[in-house]
Image 1: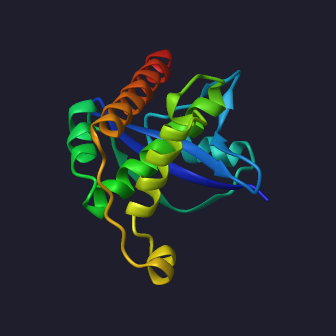
Image 2: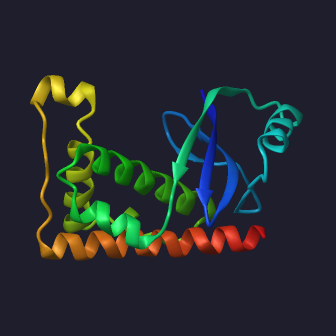
Length: 168
């Protein structure tokens, strides 16, 4: 059964509201003709959900996506669990956006290096369920991993810019 969630992005000095869904098979965003529907305010997003019989789960998840420099600083300091967790969440959101719009995102690549970076971010997030079984993990990226990770997020922000520019 699909569950729907309200997401708020603070990006380019704007509050943007989107509806994200997940189920056992796929995660994604509400779209219209392969374009993500973006709302200027929570009222419009909530009204859209009501008009389309979409039941939104409680709460709003907020993402502050600043710029590639900010993300690069977090990538250079992945030993901090909060940085891993934030990067991991943003990676997943960018991946879901790409899938929802049939857009290429290098973070969705299945090559070994990309998978290794993704797994380091996942385990470095130190989610309670993982920590209780495995203990804390604090990854370190080598030069190549850091370069590829920055490239992945740069590609994701380029994609996000295109998606948002279509809206404005």
